[in-house]
View 1 (cartoon, rainbow over the protein chains, first blue to last red):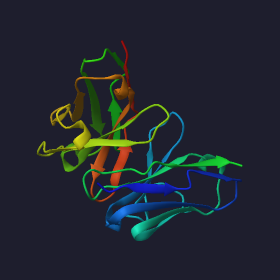
View 2 (view 1 turned 45 degrees about the vertical axis):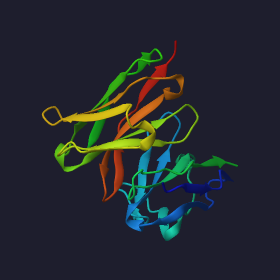
View 3 (view 1 turned 180 degrees about the vertical axis):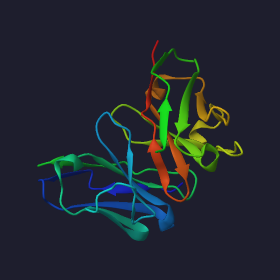
Length: 108
Length: 118
C-alpha cells in the first residue's frame, strides 16, 4: 500500500498570501495518477488537480500542481477567502487508492 | 453536467447492514467506474473500493473485504454499496464518486451519513 504523507498538517496564512502544500509518497507514484481535492466543512470533496498538474474543469488558475516520483506539491498563488479549506492528495494508480491525511489551510 | 445523487441518512444497530445508493446522471454511466469513500467524524478520507459500471468488476480495499459488496444497475444508472456487520466505528459519511483512471474522482455525490448506534 502506498502511504501518502501531507505536510504541514495546518497552514495559517492571510488572504493574498501564497500557500504551498506537500504530499510525499512511501514509494514512487506515476504522476498520471496523482490528484488533489479540496473539502470545505459539510461538503463533499472537489477535484482540483489530476495527473499531478492538470487543473480540473472550472478550477481557477491560481491553483497549480507539480511534482513527480515521491514528491508532489499543490500551490495556491494568492489565497482568496473561499480557498480556506482542507486539501487532500490521492494516488489512484495502484490499488488501494490511498489519500493523504489532509492539510488544513486556515485564516491567520 | 455529470451528477451523482445519493440516498438519505441511515441509522443502524450494531450487527446490521446498510445499503447506500448513488444515482448517476449527465454522462454515459457505463464509460466510468464508481468509487466509494468514507469519512468518519472529524477524520480524513478512506477509500473503500470501486466498481466498473460497464462489466461490474469490483476492487475492494483489503480492510473491507468480506464485509462490503458494490453493485450497479445499468438500467437505472445506479450504483450501490452494502456494508454488513456494522459496528460503531463504521459511523461515517459515505461518498460515491465517478472514477476514471484519466482524472481520478470527479464528481462526488453529496454524501450519506450512516450512524451505527445501539
